[in-house]
Image (cartoon, rainbow over all chains, first blue to last red; front, side, top):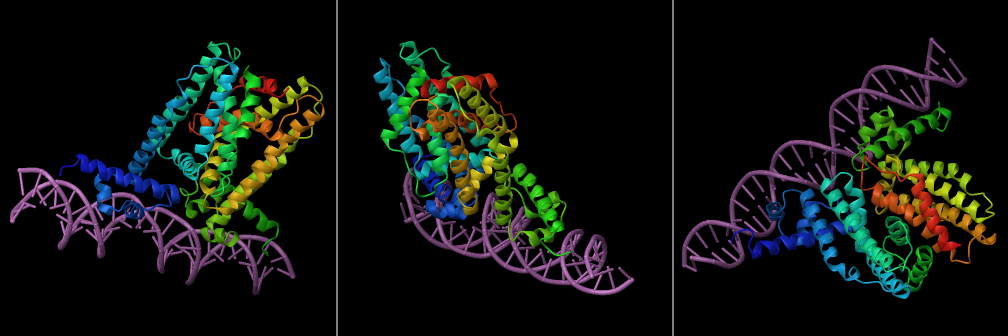
Length: 204
Length: 204
DNA sequence: CGCAAATCAAACTGAACAGTTTGGTTTGGG
DNA sequence: CCCAAACCAAACTGTTCAGTTTGATTTGCG
């Protein structure tokens, strides 16, 4: 019954899940460690056996979420882009997956936490930096780079082209999503396709 | 020496300024009312003469900031747009003013506060809703509408065209700005002009 | 001047909460 | 079946902080 066994890993995971649920529902400062313990179905003392502090728990939990997101993402990455029609399909898919996922209550709450706590929690800042620009943006940029190599898009600054594509999605998530807790209006696919269409005009 | 006199308004303003400084520096939950009093050079008790609670103070202060921003903004609005070259200039100006202002430490801190507290402070949510989409986006959209009427840009969905323009600026503010406390890298004007150039291809 | 409103400093109240300690109970491998 | 590791419930500690109370002091209008 030593720590670090299968059993211990399961308890850690159990705590992580409870903590995540609590944090998403009430925010970080709105969640007491007593409440985390209750949500996880674990005594408060056990909490402190597995995690030294609230901050360590927070970083561990959010780091895990981001990592698991990262594992599910590559399906969008390794595509060859052959012609304009094909690029349109790929971008449409990326836009749709991105917006429909990120505009759920859970992910919006996640963003809120990151933005609020990043300023005072170095661990979260590090996770954000090595994820959002280094992985997510880079992945979109890679798609565009392949498209450029195939002659599908013009010779444009790839960083700016990436921002021009990501930007409108960000307006949906940050301007519409964050402002409407509980009743988020996700744009339909047709609307996103219009954005893609507009975008393609700029880069082809 | 009645309340609501010139003198009283001055004290209110004095408190607002102290509170703003404190909130921007340490965040809302990181600022105690004792500290607000100290920053404002006022006793704690006087604080509670002018503001019923910390929340009321917060909403009042941030509401004031947003309103003052709003007054300074219209210089960008009432322009007729005659040709493509002119539109380029106007958009370049909008982009520059927007990014260079919004990427200062103060405005980034302001965003952090809004995003973090909106979820639990209805007053802030209301301010955000009647400002960001209803005023700021509408103002940009108005420019584009006039450009469309003048035949400078195509028949496009104006909401989407607005998002395509605002979006890339948002990537600078939210992705780069929020992730780099204290050492924000503002894109130079040339870089923004490249964005405008790219954008114009999409809408003309 | 004189007084009433405004302000101040400082102590206080009550609640919330991170993290600890205690002492008893469950669990599972040997 | 036994015992040590893991777990639990609950009380406790020390602190922070919003908001209040008290009682003294300042301010400026009449």
